[in-house]
Amino acid sequence: MKLLKNTRFLVVTLLVLGISIPVLAQNEIERERSSLKGIAEMGFTVNIEANVSLNEKGELEITSIKQQAVDKLEESGLTIIPDSRIRSSADLPYLYMHINTMDAGQGLVPFSVSLDFYQPAELTLNRNLQTSVSTWQTGLVGIVSYDRMNVIGESAVNLLDDFIKDYNQVNL
Image (tube, rainbow, N blue to C red; front, side, top):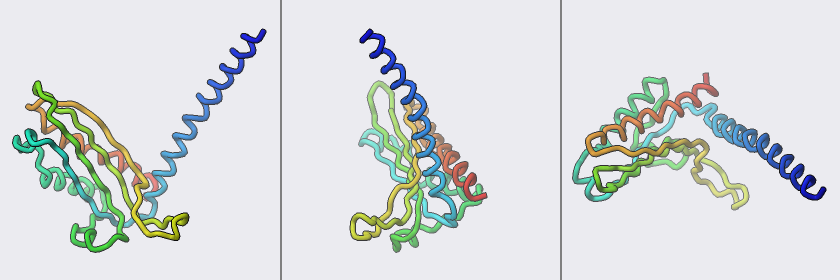
């Protein structure tokens, strides 16, 4: 009898978790998406981390990736603020792309790309401290061979589609 009670409890618990976790995750996605509403313009920056051997190969060019990304964002109708204006103010929102790579040897290069949207916020629990916080994010991981290093930049630029879709969903 006790085993039957424990089994019922376990089944009910799993059922409740199975229903509530997707709902909570969906709420978080909606909250992130809604944080993009009303944003008229934003900055954009790219940071690439690579170990020395990959830097020497010169396959990942930050200026090329950034220009492709800015072109894609502007073609979708977004207004990108020039870097000089972003650097001079902490009150402007910006989209931050971080690409992390490493040479794993054997001709393999694992990589990750994260995309975060930061905007000014006031931390009410910390005496109204003004700062920038990430309100939207996405990312991906992958692995390529040396002869396919271009896939890293392409994947990073293509990741912008997620941002553009969510931005348009709440602003159009």
